[in-house]
Length: 165
Length: 450
Image 1 (cartoon, rainbow over the protein chains, first blue to last red):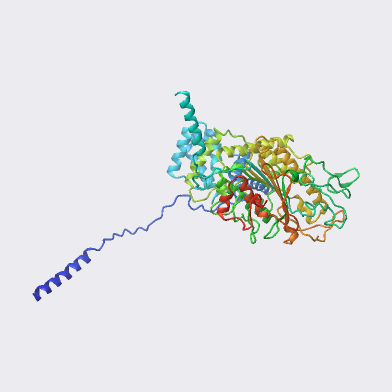
Image 2 (cartoon, rainbow over the protein chains, first blue to last red):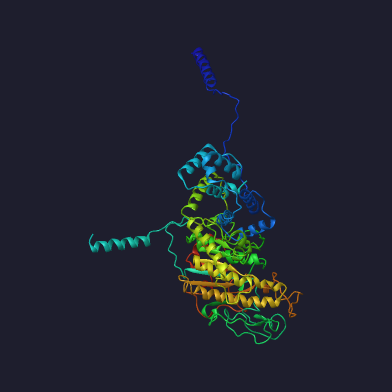
């Protein structure tokens, strides 16, 4: 009886040891660090001041710097309208009526659509488009025979990403 | 369907349309249909620090320069005879080189005081008697003891209350600034987390928009077709904005719908055309900024027919160093407000359907400073003195008792914070605004004070 109890006890200990040893998870280390995947524009978290925005916008459309006096007047004009999207749209519409504004031609856009889209992303958003963005833009250009560089430049110049850095 | 069935179904459908609850932006289902006293409100913040002595007390020079000449230089708004001596508040007699010699003819046959209700002794009860503080209290119904310039109000503005609780659109709500200085562009929405820009009103400072800054950078802007050009721009921009989904990072717009954005652009274009052709409807005398702002305000009212418009005037603040110019500008503000009221009565939809509220943002000191003007009259500042806390409020329009005076010098009635609950009361959302718990403790609808 006593022997039988001892045997039982040792059997139990052996089973427990096997159980504990058998529950260990296998870890495979491939020596690759975890990476958080963020959108390409996630670094842009600060809004530009109105003067920064106007200055960059003007330079992008006229390929030269805005004069200090003109900047001051533009800033006042923008501040006088509450909805800044509307104000920026009007400001850029005014620039678009200026014969000195520098835009690519429709022909050059149609000849090299991908180059046009890539250059536009670089000019306004200071980055390359993702493949998805590039495809969307190319498809849009194909499906809209009336779309011009002016429409693209206007949209890029007044989009939220262009207002942030 | 026979005739009887048709009538029955039509009646049921009509009843359903009226009775079906709708979801307001506040998320309130089964919102009560507001019972409105009027469909439009125009609130004039008058006009840069106004003393009671030269306004409701009608003491002219007797309350300031120790000269025994009394009289009413605001005879469009207030009941009372004008001064008969030492006239210096009108237009200049250039031939004889006399400043302010010719009083401006009244525009209204009956002063607004007789058509409405006057609270002659209202208190700007807390905080510093500064312009931005005063204007902020006027639009938000609360006081800001520690806030400075360049800060939006901590409590929601009347625009936010109306957009959130009454479902008004952005172009239903306008803040019209005399300029862009003194943080005026910040008066259209608050910094409150539950309200803010999402419910903000539109803002315009017309002397800047249509003055030299706007003429250089806005005038003759390209006319894109809204259904073709703008549509494509919006589609491309919409895609770009969707891909820039960092939370809350957007150009600070005011949630105008595309149609509202188009309407604002077209208003600006049309107004520029009028400016070029000299066709802005201006007050008969329009020789200062306040009067020109009121001219542009009428243009804006005609175009948008806003539910609520708040306009601030500021020219009388010249009282810091020129008492004569102060008197002239009080007289002009009275002229301009009468013009505004008269023009409102010519706007279809707003005629007989608009309540106008006039209230100075604060008063001025009882004691003069050391500066004298060309007439050897002393100038006045505005500190936190008791006299700088004395103001009045005048209401006129449908549902407002005529020829009623509430309160007196010995028995002041009303507070500067009252205008927001009063406007909320006019539009039937007083209870929602009160329940939000963000008004000053003293704030009360003026209708409840009568």
